Length: 520
Ligand code: HEM
Image (cartoon, rainbow, N blue to C red; front, side):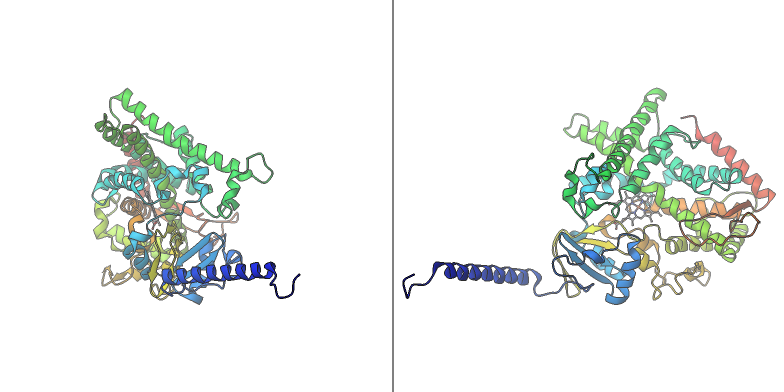
C-alpha cells in the first residue's frame, strides 16, 4: 500500500457505522415524536430480545394478572417479539380506556386460530368495521332491553322443564342445566322444541360449543408463532391442525344445518316463528338488491353467534349459583323466606315479580361477582396509538380485561371471597352506591355483551324458580356425610323439593311446559 493513502475498508466500516447511527437516531426521534416522550405503562421488566415472553401466563392468567395488579397497579404492560399486551385491572381504568377511548379500542386481535377453527364466522371475534356493525345491529335489534320480552315465555318453559328434570335426576345437574339453556336457545333461534338429550340437533349445537371452548386462545403454539399455521396436518407435532379443522367443521354444521332445518320446518308447516325465519324474511325483503346472498349469510351467522354466545355463559353462572347455595345455607333460607312472602305456595315466580324480590336480585348480582363466568373478558385491540394517564399504548396492542380482579377487589367488595348478597342491599333496597357487577361482568365500550338483558332475565327466572321449590345442600359421600366442594368447576350438590306442595307445583308446571312446547 502507498504511504499516506487511507484504506477503503475502514472507510466503508466508518460509513456503515455512521449510517446505522443515523438510522438509529432517526428512529429514536420518530418514536419520541410518536410517543411524545411518554413511557409504556408499568409491568414486569422485559428481557433483551425475548421481552416478557417467559412472563406470559397460559393457565388461569387472571391469577398472575392480579399479582401484577398489586405490584404495578390498574394498568400493566408487557411486550415480546410480535406481542404488545395491556392488562386492565380496575373498573375505572376499563371505563376510561374502553368506553371513553372506544373509537380507538373496539377492535379484536386477529389470531390465525380464528380462521383455522371457523370462529371467524362469529361476530364476537370480528375486526371492528362495517361487517361487525351489520351483524351486531341485527343482533341488537332483537336483544335490546325491550326486545327481549318476546323470549320470556320460552325462558319460563325452559326453567319449568329444568325443575321437572331436576326432580327426576338431580345428580345430573350439569347436563340438565346445559340441556335447559341450549334447548331454550334452539327454540328461540331455530324454532325447534328439543326435549331429549339425544336429540341430533342438540348434539350439533353442543359440538359447536365444545369447538368454541377448544378454540379459545391459550391452547396452541400457533397463537404465539403464526407461521406454524402453514405446517401440514400430517407433520409430526401438527395435531393442532386436526383439532382446529374438527372445530371448524362443527361450527359450519351449526351454521348451515340448523338454519336449513328451521327453513324446512317453515316450508312444511307454513310458518316457524323464530330468529332464523325473522332474519330470513328481512333478507327476502331485500331481494333484488345486490346484498341478498350476503343477507342470508348474515342471518345464518347471527343465529350461530346467538347459540354460541349464550349457552355456556349463562350455564356457568347458574352452576356457580348451585355451588354458592350449597355452601351458604343462610343465604338460601333468606331468599326462600322472601319468595314465600312475595310469591306464596300456590304458584312459581315470574319475570314480573323481579321488582318485589330484592334479596333474590342481590343473590343474582352476587352470582355474577363471586364465580366470575368470564374472568378474563374477550380481548380488545388498539386501532390507534393511545395516551392514557401519562402512558403510551401503541396501535395493535391487545387489551385484556381482568374481570376477576375487578369483581374481587377488596377495596370495592369487602371480603370478596365470601358469597354475601347483603353487600348490595341498604334499607331494604338495592344500594346504588355499591358497584354493580353487571357493569363489569359483561365487558365495556362498543363491544359490551349485547346479550346481557337476555342473560339477566334468564338468570333471574332460573334462580327465583329453583330457590322457590328446591332445597340445595352439599353433596353426600357414600356414608351419607356432606362433602365440602368449593371449586367453581365442581357444582355437585344435593337437590330436594322443599315440600310435597313444591313437588306438585313442579309437576304441574312441567306438564304445562311440555304441552306448550309443540312437536318440532
Ligand atoms: C352471564 C352471561 C354472560 C356473560 C357474563 C357475558 C359476558 C360477555 C363478555 C365479557 C363479552 C365481551 C365484552 C367486551 O368485549 O368488552 C361478551 C360479548 C358477547 N356476548 Fe355475552 N355474556 C353473557 C351472556 C350472553 C348471551 C345470553 C348472549 C346471547 C344471547 C351473549 C352474546 C354475546 C355476543 C354476541 C358478544 C360479542 C359482542 C361483540 O363482540 O360485539 N352473551 N359477553
